[in-house]
Every structure is written in structure tokens, then in C-alpha cells.
Image 1 (cartoon, rainbow, N blue to C red):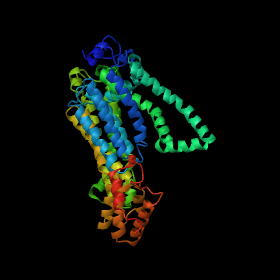
Image 2: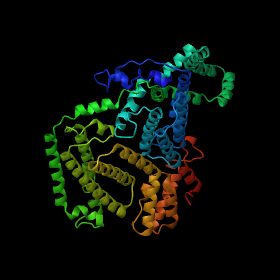
Image 3: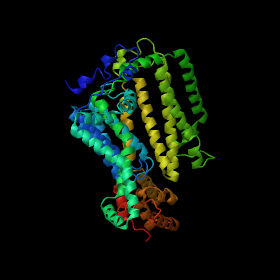
Image 4: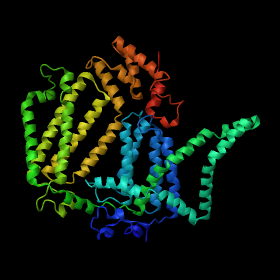
Length: 544
């Protein structure tokens, strides 16, 4: 009998939950026994190494990122994949797409100069890592990607890792108890760590007491850097929580320990209990909301949709027209999405509309009257999003791109995809969670592979050269990532305006100085290396 079969009932399988009153939480209350093998103990050592590498290779996930971040995710996936393979879990048709997304998502760290938005990619990679481990071990609450991924997310981010958080330490101590060599090695390591403060203090005092000893230690320190040793020791200590989290996720999913705390049956039961608001209480609010939007469209008339034709309403500048109501429209769209989710979660169902067959197909329906109003709200929200996007594009055509404008357009595209899928779901119910999750993953990857700063610089410079833009914001390009260097070089040599040429030259000189944002790839740590910065350093001709 394999480890998975041995531990299934003890660690939260469906059969272990049948006799409980609340299957959603019952397994979390059960105390599962720890059962380690030599492979689990070996992986614990590697988990602590990964925890140390996390702090050594990822000094900041939103600034000064580089190839080390990509390498960390690749190494972590390799080590974890080998461990899971060793205990009987092969890659499958569900885990391979997640692994592909994980490895592909790590590439922008090595390709492009990092900016603050890379924090989103870093968090996305962490989430995909957990999904990959879950799919490799077959611990998802459903057999296919669906809206139940929210239950999986809670289970994999919080329940499984923290329920097995102490597993790494227990595996090491259990291995030390069972093996004489392991016990001696663990005790020796603990003794070395504990002796470091005493030995450091003694050496410093002896160096002060005798010049000969000081010269001898000077030669030793040339070979063994004490600062580096101290840094690695600190990284090992602060990396322990990271190691415990990684180990908890892999061990918990691999052996099924508390991996069934949140189940589909429990989620369905909780949703059924939550759907208590009568339809008579929900309908009036939806009717009023839909009526407000209809009045809004009638009152605005042609003004609201003039951006579609590129016309500027009388009495407005481009900036005033684009900004007026733009963020309010985006806010209204977000509120509408929250309203639809609220109705789906809490509105009471009629008989036959929330059947087991519909839930098994991940296609539960709303009552017809509610579908009519929520579908209408979805349509009007899509119209609001298209209006807001057209106003933003009109603004971009006049003043160029900025980071905030790119991110705003990306967010509106994401919202438009979500509402399109929701509208189609209203017309003919289907598993809407799958396309929404896929759309989100694709748009996140597109955002980072598009090289946002390079896209902004390219669009603004080419629009300026073609005459579509009257000028270029040189100051903005100066303080963006290294993607702007080739375009500053281009403006320095070929800009038709003397002021722009002078500004580009000054920007390049500033970036070349000690306080610039351009990293000297060959003089800095390898951790921050990326292809874009390397090419910028190699090709830039500063100050000429």
C-alpha cells in the first residue's frame, strides 16, 4: 500500500468526513499523525536550502529583480518535482500546464529590467507554484478547472502549508532519532550554529590582543569571508519559515495530510446555507440599479459615446474629457461585478435550479428573473468599460502612454473579458470559472512579456517622430527602466526638436552617473542581471 492510500482516511479524505456535522471544517479539527520516510527527511534538508536561497537570490521581489528570481523558481520547481516523483507522483495532464505557466512566468525576471509591477508577477508565480503542487498530487476539490479554484486557493495557501508547517523540523528530528549518522550530523550542525557567537567574540578579542594572530586571521579571512558566512547564517535562520511553508505544501499534498480539510461537498453545503435571501428582496435592488444605468445613458446622450468616433465634445479639452468620470466608470464596473457575485452567492434558488447535477457540471443556474437583470447589468457594464477605454485611448493618442495608462487599459481588458464570460454564462450556463482563470493567466503573462516600459518608450518616441505627439516626456523616460535607453539614444541623435535632443542627452548622462537607475551589469551582483540591462549597458553611448 502506498503512502497516499495509507494516509488518506487519517488525513482528511471524504470517507473520514461523512460522519461529521460540518464537513467543511471537520478535517481541520482532526489530529493526523506524522509519518516520515527517509525521502521526507532528505527533502527537509533541501527545503531549508531553498529557504536560504529565497533570501539570497530574491532581495526584493519588486525592485532590482533579475535572473536570480527566475533561477529560484526553476530550482524550487526541480527540487519539489523530484521529491514528489520519488514518493510516487508523476506529472499529469493537469500539472503540466501549471508547470509550463510557472516556468514561462519566471522568464520576464531574466529578460527585462524589473519595476514595481513585477511584485504582481512574483505573487502570481507563488500562486501557480501551489496550484502545480496540488495538481501533481491530485488534491484539487474537482477534477477540472472551475470556480471551485477559490476553495483550492484557500486550502493550498493557508490550510495545507500551515497544518504541516512544523513538518520540516519534525522530519529532521525524526530522522535524527532513527539514524545514528543523521543524529550526529544534526547535533554537529546545531553545535556549530550555537558556537558562532562565542567563536566570533573570542577571535575578535584575540585579534586585538596580538598582531601576529591578527595577520594570520587576515590571511584566513581572505579565503573565508566572515561577513559572507554571517550573511548565510542569517539567511538560513530567516529562511526557516519559507522552508517550513515549502515543505508543508509539498509534504501535505504528497502524503495527503490535512489536504482534504476543505472539500467540494463542504463548499456546496456552505453555499446552500448562505443562499437565504428571498428573491423578493433581491429583485427590487437590481431593478433600481438597472434603471439608474438606463437613465445615465439617456442623460449623457452622444457626449458619453463621442470618444468612439474620436470627437471631442464642445467645451472640453482632451485631458478634461478623458479624466472626467473615467475612474468613476471603472469603480462602477467593479461594483457591478461585486453585485453579480453577491447575487450568485446569497440569492435563494427555486426548486430545480441548484441541483446536484448542475453542481457536478459546475453550472448552477440563477432564477430566470435574476438572470434577466444580472445579464442586463453585465451588458451595461461592458458598455461602460468600452466607453472608459475609448476615452483613455483618445487621451493616449493625444498625450502618449504612461505606466498608469497601460495598467489601467490592461485592467479594463481583464474586466471586459470577465463580464463577457459572465454574460455568455447567463445566456447558456457553462463552467465559467475555467475561461475566467485562463483569461487571467494569459493576460498576466501578456502584461509582463510585453515589456511595459519598452512598449511605452517605443510608442511615445515613434508617435513623436511621426508628428502624432507634439513632444516627449523625457523626464518620465529618464526614471523608467533600462528599456528606455535605446529610445533615448534615438532621440539624442535624431529628434527634430533641439530641446528634446538636449533633454535626451542630459537623461543619458544622468543614467550613466553614480545615482542613476541604470545598473552596471558587469560591476554589480549577478543576481540583478537581466538581458535588457546588459544590452543597454553594452550599446549605450553616454555623454557624447
